[in-house]
Length: 153
Figure 1 (cartoon, rainbow, N blue to C red):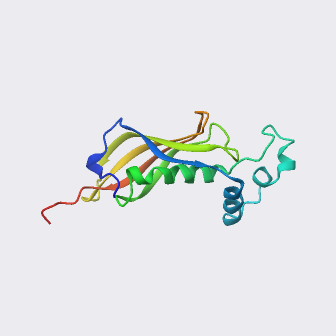
Figure 2: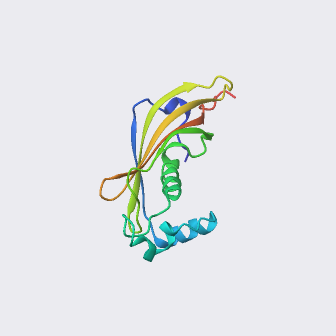
Figure 3: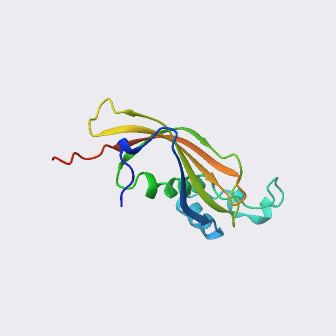
């Protein structure tokens, strides 16, 4: 199974990705340990009881990574050459342990590569949504996507 090639992307097309994931305390512990992030907003329940959130937050970059992974199977598996950049990377709502997240994507635009003949640039919007239907993450990114291989070669 592969993702989509450059030619397959249609501007304006929306995808609702099948993967879902309930975020756990273990996810936070592993992520903060791997990234050396000791922030009490992620690790200290007592500290967080005195804040506006009243409980620990899941790290925003973990949320972004999770949503970014959920889109791979449908869109970019074995057909991407990499990310070129992000122009939006927002977290409109917090994520808490026990939230179940899913992803949706929209194809914003695409264009031929100016320097490569085997690929083009696709502009994506990826949205992370919790079980309450709240958007918790929005990313706009450009990806370098392979063109469909020539069957005659």
